[in-house]
Structures are given as structure tokens and as C-alpha cells.
Image (cartoon, rainbow, N blue to C red; front, side):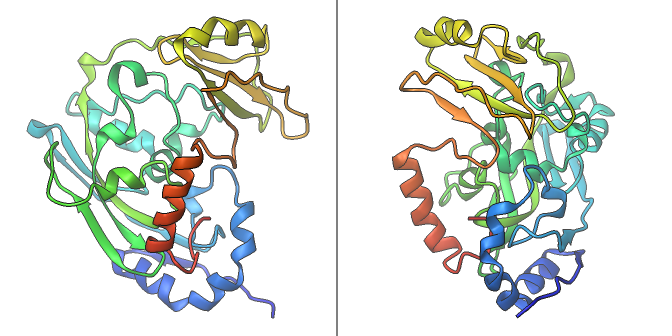
Length: 287
């Protein structure tokens, strides 16, 4: 049977829930399509990876004295940073490993879902340090809220941290509670710029190694690199879509990231698979 995807603009958390439940059969029928979603299309994210469910949510509530913001998952990062800057605050985030010039206009949900390295990570941490709470809808259409406005919350399972970096394979996010910092306290990025020049549609490959392997990694890449961070021992090179990637040298305890791959080892993959069976047993979200 041929299905025509509807376009649903969800303007509330309940509307996201209704869309997932109402299109359950359609979502399940399109399961193979979940494996071919674009590498950065979270602004059109949908439970089957198709561009039909478009959350519309622009909430932004700042608690400046507590360095906390409650914000829509679908606001562009640039807009969030601009609003925070009005009060001298910021998310200490520098997307220096992403060549897309429009990257700052991607929604927060994409950045949190991917949780990839960034230029200020060594000094200021990353999304798992900043996300204090999440609201969203699971693959079974269950609305959930996790976390709070306090930095330390020991009441119950730390679900919101678990969802960071999961690429929305367990839930469609609706809003985040984030810890922010003072703009004046942000340190300079240690990321070095290399000889590679981004070509149109080039995608990054990232490799992170242990400190003792850093010099060997740098030597192995020669002049074929775009960005590197000596503090987190992360090196990035670019690959055009129609050009075979240069084989990367593995150092045993490192990881290599390319769009569509996982940063998880066997034990982590087993744990994520187990969680998947609990949060999304019918595989209605990203695999």
C-alpha cells in the first residue's frame, strides 16, 4: 500500500502526542525509511525520519539569577544565544567542527540529539552538563517530563541526561531546561584551523584518541584535516559526498564519527538497545 505523508504542525506537547498516536500504522509501515534520514534535519524531525511532524514552539523563559533557561527544543541556536546575550549570558558552545554555514540556525534539538564535540568542550563541558530537564513524547505516545530547575536533582532516574546524544531514538523532545553561563567568563576556543577548505555539502569526520596517541593521530592525518582540538584530542577532517573517505588509522581506544554512525562501544550499544525496547518497543522513532 502506498502512503501519503500528512504534514502536521504540532503547536503543543499534546499535539505531538496525538500525531504519534494517530499515525501509528503509517509510522510502523515506513520503518525502513528511518535508516535514510538526512544527517541534519531535526527541524523536520518525525518519528519515522520523514519530514511530516513539524513542532512549532518558541517558548523562552529565563531565570537569570539562577543561570537557568527553560526553552523550546525547536528554537534555533542562534536565536537562543541572542536572547541570552541580552542579559550577558550564553551557552558556552562553539560549533567549530560543523562546516555548514547555517549550523547556528539549526534548532537546539539537533545539537542536543547529536551531542558531538565542540570548540569549548574542554573548558565548559557540553550538553550532558547543561541539560537539567527535558519534556517530550516517547515512541509509544507517552508524555514525559524529567529533571528540574536545580543543578542537582537526585529524585529518580536521570532520564534527560540519558536522552542527550540519543538522536531522538527514544523520544521527540519538546523543551529543555538548560544551565547557562556568563558571557564574560567564556574562554577562548583552543581549536586550531587546518589546511582543508570546505566544499559544498562536505560532511565532517571526527576522531578522538587518548592523550598518548594524539601526536600519532596528528602525524597520520598529515595535511588532510580541517579542525583539531589539542585539549580534547579531537581531530576533524571533511569528506565530500561523492568522494571516498580517506581511511582513518585506529588507535584501539579511540572513536571515529561519521554521519549515520554511532559513538558507542559494544556495552553502551547493548544498554541503548535495552532502553530502546522499553521506551520505544514498536520502533516508531529513529532506530
